[in-house]
Amino acid sequence: MAVSRSLALLAPILAALPAGAAGVARSEDNLARGTCLDIKIRLPKAETYIRGETDPVLDLKIEVTISNVMPKDDPVRGIGELYRPVKLSPHDFIQFEILPVEDVAAEGGEGGGEPKPKPKPIRRDMPLLPAEPENLRDSKYLGPGESETVVVDAGRHYLIDRPGIYSIKARMFGPNGIVSNEEKFRVLPFKKVDQSAAELERLWKQYERDRLEFPFMVYQVRTNAAFDEVIYVQRVVNSRTDHYEFH
Image 1 (cartoon, rainbow, N blue to C red):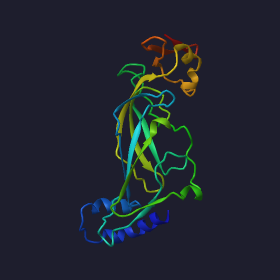
Image 2: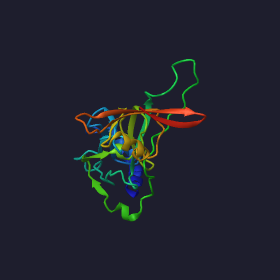
Image 3: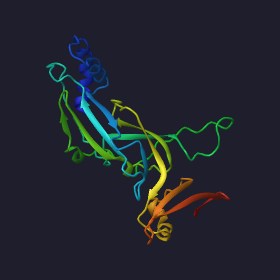
């Protein structure tokens, strides 16, 4: 955006000024990248999650704080910038980078085997599209020293389909290269479904969005008794064809 290009031109000039406020080094570092914005994330709910009934991960909320790191009371360095609120829409200017750190269901032991392939980022359930002018109408101005915090439901839109430990960062689109801190969370191979065992087996692919790549899953299902029932589903590979057995 035009503001970012202007900041990039101002960076060497502002860097030559005397540093009179805390956080100036951080401000100049951001200016060198063409922005005065910074981003941080936090997991406000927990560090361990289960699968959602229809969402890939239940209640995986991410708290995103966007801050203008420029000093508020400095008439020279006090620069504002426009940004778009984080909504996890197809036109967001921020995306989450979620990577598997440890797959609790991975096959094979440690040592002596072939090196593990590089983990692939978790995909979103919809592609990110270029922002059209009408998508920029909700842009906001963030003045020097100001910040805004929003909470978004990443577990609904990122297709995490295997149990394990994952890392997550937020990255701003554009040439600025602003990346947030990293957090970690664990996903258990368990979900609660408000259906009977027979209904679950009949509608199983629908509940899993046709993404049946996990080796096993445990479901808590409804019964007519005073207790629920637990169903174990296991993937069995036979002649290069996947079969899923319900127990």
